[in-house]
Length: 466
Figure (spheres, helix red, strand yellow):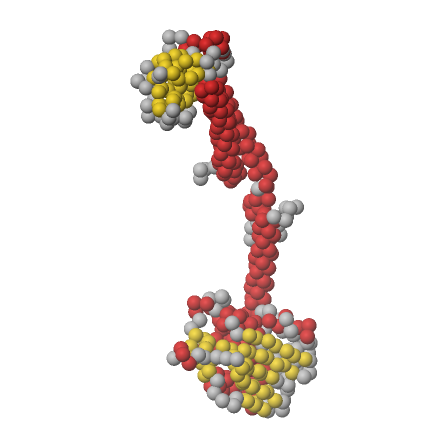
């Protein structure tokens, strides 16, 4: 069975089911015809019984015919298509009289058979249908009447019907198999298209798509689903290629700057102040490079790796204060006023390391792009077992057209000229990936020149987990 093709398996399963149905129909036809034939014969036997009861009388234990001449002239003297055999027995089962067409033969009395109930037996090797009934005089049994009818013609009809059905059955199955195989082949044509399309799809050729069937059936849905899958795979590979290209460019840029700066330094002797200036410049570029590598490694580590997540009780107030401490120097140099609005202690159930990373990226962006003497407000609130954290600044803002793009890797909005502000373009991309991984709601709103507001909604820590 396993070596059969899909088309042949469909055809085979179809004819097995259809064959059983045809077999049931043929069996029903045969048994209905057989029942009809036997009912007709049994009806004739009962009529004969009644007729012969009328033609005789019993006197002193002897059978006396009412019209002997008629008895001699009846069909029992002739060869008939369906001859009727009649026989009278006394109580000792001895023959009193029998129809002339029995000649030297006799009908056998079957003591175990029910009276007035027809049954099949044989006469001279031929099948007959026989009935045996008692003869009574004044409620006293005086003998038996046996009447039989030949089943030769009926048996021939039933045998011919059986032969016809047995010959027709395999022919019908044979025809049905090839018809089912033909239509199954047409039905699974989209599957062949899927196979052919799959063979020509490679990592360098992701443009091929499966032709959609005209009928909107399951194969249409399957083809459409596979095409959508191919679209997602193509998009993912294109994003990966673009990410690799951007990452290479971002890594190459600081290395090129460092190399160029060092080459300038070795061309001729310079004073210590100029050496110090160029070395500090290279150190800044190395720091930028380290930051970029760290973020790339973090992305690789937590890329859809839910098994690396370790959820626990996280004290959100302390995490925010720690992140602000890390940015103290930048906050002071920018003369930024940071307000933490937390009226109570807030605990969340999440991964501490990832939450720190998320808040560090968002708060460092708020500090980095804030205007001097501006304000950053961080507020915490609770509602329906959810804790909301809103981080708003009065920085340069982001254009509406760039709000979706800033979540892509290495993208930096050029709405305002801030080339002097160092960045990798990975911060918000990492935030988006990690919030998705932790199932934290993340929303960002911004307006050019007015600032940016970020919303994070965490799952509150359940005390029952303690």
